[in-house]
Length: 309
Image: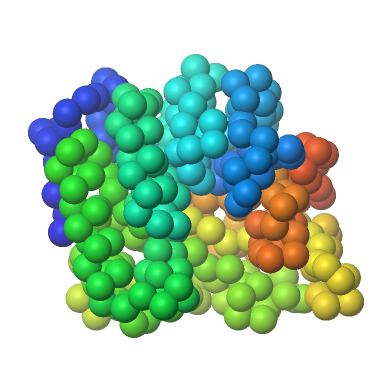
């Protein structure tokens, strides 16, 4: 389903950059991070939308620490301004994710994407979209077909690389999402959800093994760009005894091992999502900084240079 033209032939708007630059950067530089605003922003309830001042402060914080590529989490709740502000701060590339909980939300996200497309280098159409549709009781194949249609629509409209946040269950049941849909594969590989919650070395090994399994999918094009979008190790859990190995020190070890592996990944996440500490510890406690922007031990272990494979 790849409709990507490296010369931007399908693009309705452009930002003066070659579209291939973003994929090259993802494959060559570690200076990429998943970003959603810190406290008091609450995406799940739509409370405390991100302000311009908050976005400028936090994006400058990440830029000053050496990050140059950004993956966003939504194009609503004030976050539609992230791509533009990130480019003003100095970020080289921004990948905009469309949050897709229902059709009404998707349409709002797409309108905001259209308004800000000049500052955007690639698009992620939903995060674990098919998995979430099935959980809501929808038919899996219908969700797969719809995802493919939405991705093709945005490919044709903008001529920029398009992908989706790939859940491991979606890949195993519908491998075409990984092998055919969009222009590159962006996998979510969270050890927490396969019960690897206490040993960071084992968790990192699972991530590197899982991405290799995806690479080995029958029918996978040899030139397909395949990357880890999300892989986090929470620095805490509620209650603590539920995962005694989820500590700040263990989080640092997890990323040390992931860096040592040479795998291409986007750091997850910038800041703890304080509203998700109970429902999703990888997001709630997976930040490199806590919800008040205090650094965790992992920050001293970051490698933001080139991959050495």
